[in-house]
Image (cartoon, rainbow, N blue to C red; front, side):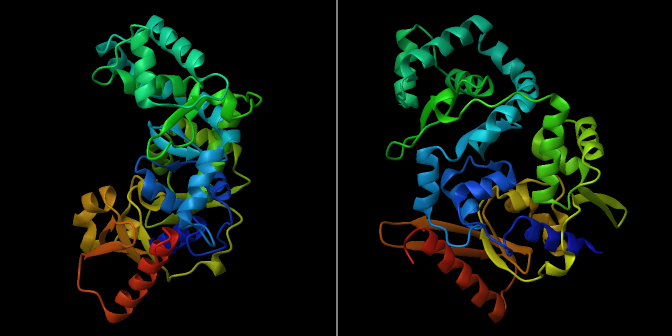
Length: 351
């Protein structure tokens, strides 16, 4: 097995070119968590893994709460299912809060301030009320809680991590927050090792082949956690060694079904890129000096290899796509990319 095989298997296991899903929540559930701070393109990340996807269908899932958007890993925004959000936060929040401790102290956010803000959230959101950030600022100011600088962001994130609030339905283009108890039913708490095992199993199943360091990068947990989870799941996971590097993935993968072909317009922070500490497998050696552009901008992938960046300008009746290949495109590459462009336009209802 070669490094290129690693790339083909990742594309396959992330369901970009095999057995696509029918519903947004099926994608998110399989992937366990999907990075989602660039919201419009994060919806496209879900769409890429669906048979027949539209932006409206993914937005509807957010509106109805079949998928949620919150801070749950590292920390940054992620899509996650209501039935997963509590056990995941119970596992990851302590490390995120520890990492945020210096910022909490810098902005004078004590337990007393947090508790006072939480009471404001409960008072103003209970009964199904979903508030925009502007409305939340007003409510906090009425309670004499300052929201300048990063204080608002930190207050909201702490409330998310403490399983008090999560995403609500968007109101126009504005995001809202809602009480988690009203968006996600209560679930039974599970032991920490069981939660670690669950996260490890779902990561390596959906993202494998991946290394221990890849999991640590993605989850924000420790190497010890990764090894514990792998040991618990040793019957479900298989280990392969490529060029001296140890990778883990589901033991049920049918290697004969992996494909070397496939052309995609990947969104920025797509799981195929951002979920790994080392991205060499999906980037040709000659483009390794482009890692910054590949990490922080949307990318073009042809035959399971990144070959450039792209950007879009969406109008009311059309979408302009600008291709930024790292090298001259062949005719076959250009034709394949055009098909991917049309798929993106169709997703946005402007094909």
